[in-house]
Image (cartoon, rainbow over all chains, first blue to last red; front, side, top):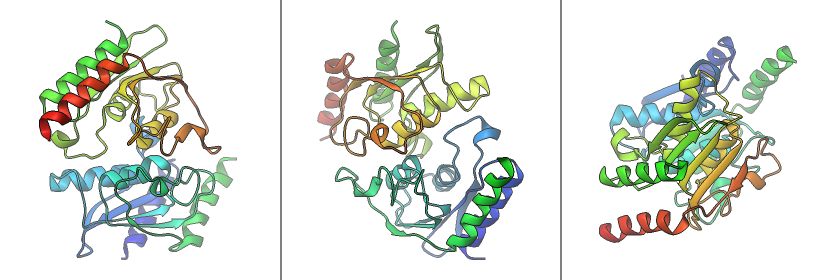
Length: 146
Length: 146
């Protein structure tokens, strides 16, 4: 499975738990999976328990290192400003995301975290990977809930 | 003790652990302390383990609720974009901070998280509380390290 396929699997699992279907995975330079996670905001009663933050924290904990300079964070949705800033703090080398998020995103939209001159570490960014599939998951989830 | 005095105590404890001296506390509408924390980035090998995020997560966990709409987050330093966005996600009513952070701050500087039209929840913000003391702690910490 590609990292985005793993992230999509995590997003589907999140939806099954009643969470917003976003999934993320952290892989190292060799493509090995260090950590994978889906949203757990409701389950953990933690508004910061976004897929990205959970995966980054787990990957760093697994290594015992607060920085992941050789790693790629792959996520089904454009990260929010919180997670984009976290990706910078964890010094990930690359950020790959699926769907764009004009309302909540903080990479290509809104706060545009990496564009701030004060942002010390800017990862390489690739957006729109399997965009249709990633976006369809979210649309399906919110359509049922409305 | 006032919330800022508690936050300062946490900041001093963080410095003693070799962490950047920032402390935070979450209090409810009655002024009761729900959680207090200092930076633990190095100790936890977690680049997101800022005082604010740790205190917000602990307060929400203590309540079993991912949102803290009646609460105040008091922190010795202007929150970074990650923590400012987290404060919005946790829906804190008020954010009180000490020193301003022109380089890393995300409230009055840089990404200015709460000013983005896409920011759903904007807390009341009070900056500059015991600013001199909060800033001196940080300056002292970095002076020794240089």
